[in-house]
Amino acid sequence: MSTISEAVGKNLDLSANEPLKELVYKAFRKTIILGEIPAGQRINEKEFSEVMNISRTPIRYALQKLVEEGLVDHVRGVGIIVRGISLNDANEIYAIRKSLDVLATITAMKEMNSEDFDELKALLEETERLNEANEIDQVLQKFSDFNELIYEKSKMLRLKSIVMKLREYLVYFRDISIRSKDRRDKALNEHWLIYKCMLNQEEEQLKLLITEHLDYSQTFILKEMEKHLNETAK
Image (tube, rainbow, N blue to C red; front, side):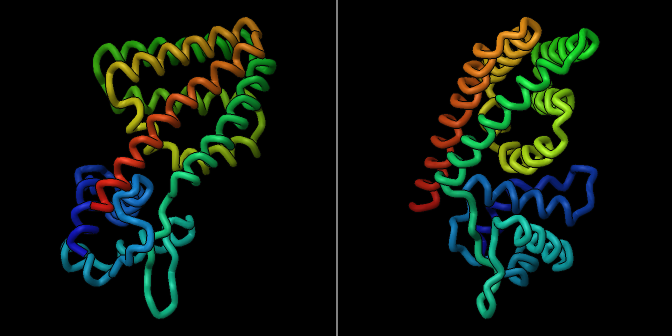
């Protein structure tokens, strides 16, 4: 249990201005998604509460949300067992994401007017400013804003809701894959290229760009997951 407590504790940000139950949930979620708690591991609510000196109520809330999300299972007579995300899961998530992002971006490209393209350009310019200032968390948020704006402009509400669910998993992958300055610069450049292809209505080039953009992230993340799996196996 101390191993689980240490792993979750590293991802528990008590300085954030959110209810404790949400912070505990997010810490567990991130730890499980990154593979820092091995699949098959049992989480003992009572022991975790005692080790972390946290009331059982927020822990119970967090674990219930994880059950609903499919990241853990509630096994009768055993308790909470980590299901986690496997390498196959990550590959499947990225395969779906690539298809949906291509569909949304091409649809948005055809729907957007000059004011919409100005809005997208202004967002990229602000991202560039924040990146030069090394405001990492704000840059990551702007990357998410870029993607969400494209989905909004596609006017495909059902598609957006599907992708938002996937992005709950991908957000931690993204944070790992683009925290370095070189990768942030590359990702921002890729966003500019996507914007220019959309502006010029270059559909085939846009498909290639989006696929390449996500392929790079997928390769990086799979290596990180394998590294975590190897470390936890030792």
